Image (cartoon, rainbow, N blue to C red):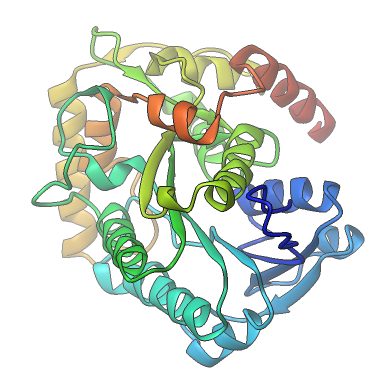
Length: 339
């Protein structure tokens, strides 16, 4: 990875926050394959990263001094780590997603890091309505149904503000990342397989992205930002560029796991009402853990949300190298190794 503007600047040291996570590890693997010096900053230690020759710094994003020290002598930072979830109070998400991102920005400035590539989410613009072929011009909604998208939006604004002040940044919004070793999306589907039902009769189209494609997009973003610094501050949706009915996506994942397809159907109103009641019960009795369904989850199952990735194609040269069909085949092969 060299600055192709001809300034002769060699990228030597790269840090990935959350390098042991699902997307973070996929990015790390691709960087290591390019013989780059990669460091992971995470709360945990990962033997697999050690075996790849990756330097690991254990620390917390909320620890400002630890982040500053971790970013010493770094050229590029991929800020992937975040607290994810569709449930929980704002105070549980702000430390990692907002304060942590501000700490990364401050550390980049203090250490003269050349680039910050930030992983966001399309959920930051979800307004509870169908989002079909929308682009990056869509504004943030006035209110949010959950703490995760709200705090990711707060973090996005911090990164955008840093770009306005001269920091070189790019924000990526991958939608529903999946693939082998997924520890968020797919496990939830598998765990609830017997209870899942199709929501409504309409074919709600949804975007997803295979994990290796998401990792490619992050690396492309860094390369293109070095070539064209004017891209700094831009936001990009990235996906498989192949929206599918959500029930077909879920059934494809179930099939890859060797499970039967969903049975039965439930109306949009019923699932939303269920989410409302369950949320009330969890709040009233202060129940720990994540509910089976929430109002946000109900809305996501009963709306279309797919995005125009023309900007990523034009500016970053991004196209999904791994097709959905190939990704599902790889997923099925991975599931077979778990048996």
